[in-house]
Picture 1 (tube, rainbow, N blue to C red):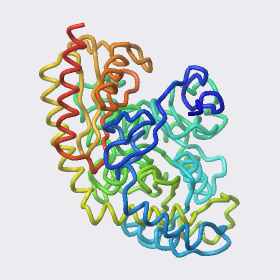
Picture 2: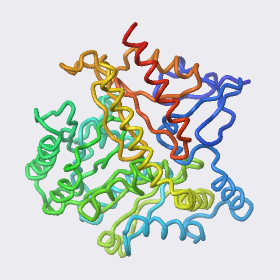
Picture 3: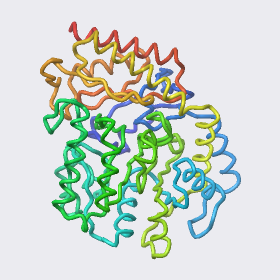
Length: 437
């Protein structure tokens, strides 16, 4: 079999050092490689495969759409594009809103910012985001992101971007003594930055409501407080739901846990939108923004805007989430997974914090000392002990995802309960071996 390393530049690595098995198939929460090794997917492969691998409903829809119509440009209408846009607006409660389709999360975030600036009539309007965040790897998205990996590649000021400290309650940058206090101070920091920059020059605040690979799950009072601050200051609120939507956090969209008190003005989607069966992203805009944009010239476009195959996959994915009640299932299993992880925290001193649990998404942060909260390695380095744990798990048929000192648990929403239990049992054993080493 051809070695990819000889022909492909791989992402987020030194390409010459890349080495991984060749995956040839998958089903449900499993995928397998060319050598016949089977892996239980405990990360949904970058939190994408919410529906598991090769979901039959989605595969069938792609096949049928391919036989009917593969492609037309956005100069022409298509049935799957129209139906998917309507379905997304209904699920989000964005009555009379509009949908702009993209290829992924990064271009969705860029277009959300572009639309916010155009609606505010501020072509260079300031965007406020937060440290230790990630919105994509294009130059604009690197500017939006507070990511240590790309910090030296772009100057956020040149893109009219300002960063504020994150609502990282376990290591609160504001020195808070409780989660709620950290949430309050993080919201106050956004308000202070708006005031300092000048509310009339702010186009939008771009934030993640819940799940993210940064491992920060905000306190419950953070998102409603952020919504209140942005509304009172006349700034649009953009919810980056690329990772947190479609059941990952126990709701269709993570902000819905707070009802209308958390409803954003714009929302970006990708990943679970098609369950990653084909690439597709989207920007949803509220009625207020839609009324402004639909009467202006939009100087933007994408060749594969609302691609028929992708939109057919998106529609099928929504049907699968509905028919199999996967949103509710994620909420239930996520609570059970979180409870078991909290039990493991009491057992293993190496677990400093467990957060998440609103759906099938949880973060386990590892430390060398739970009292001082000393990390095993400086962020964003991954400690060798954790690398060894992942290697052992993979050899035993379970694929865990890590970043820095974090274990990111986000299995497909279709995972069998026994599979989830077995994976957590293996994690328990491997953590014990780590502590004894």
